[in-house]
Length: 280
Image 1 (cartoon, rainbow, N blue to C red):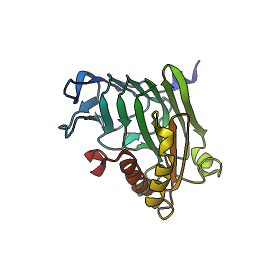
Image 2: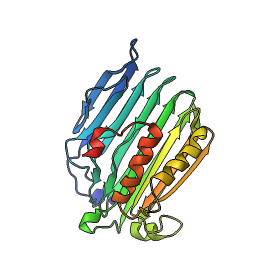
Image 3: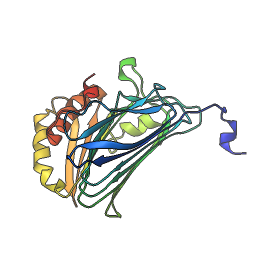
Image 4: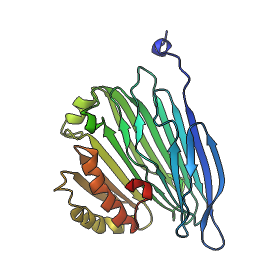
């Protein structure tokens, strides 16, 4: 008998948003197709420029064990899209089943996409598998930012036990150019306390920028890190660039400090304010 046979059988949420966006003749990017299912919805604030902003909303208020959520975004040639979320996403505790989150992004020639969800909060004993796949044209530009928080600091929580598998795979021109996998299983707090893992940090984030000129942004990002005052905020930050990619890593004891560092970094790098939902 498999271990899963002893898990409680519950009705689970299956959420999905699939969208397509295209650049119109006048230069503006607009939605061309949208499919929604389950508690996952997309809201489109009034455009203030030629680009398009989409805000993902989980009407369930959180994600429970065994839930499965998927987001798919397809951008036509020259399209410009920002995707974010209304608030931090919560991954509740699990007594066995694994939560599954999947994101698939496709960027045609000259398209620009910024994937900027607010942080994901893991509860103690949460079990999460998350995967992000992107297929992009060689001249497209993709900016990704994801933050993870281990426990709710305001409640004095930590993630003592649980499992996390976080996978990123980026293909440019059909060729795999970036592969990153984070896996924590079992005594998560003990693993995060190790100096070679997180040195006791409870919040971490990765920003990845993939574009033809990404390497040329290295010095500017270093200057932005200095200006953000990461040392004063007790946020560890590092940046590297290679093969048309720029990667920034952030570690902090709590999410408040990490956000205070990440917001000026993202706004300075993109030269534009973050979506309004980040400010509420």
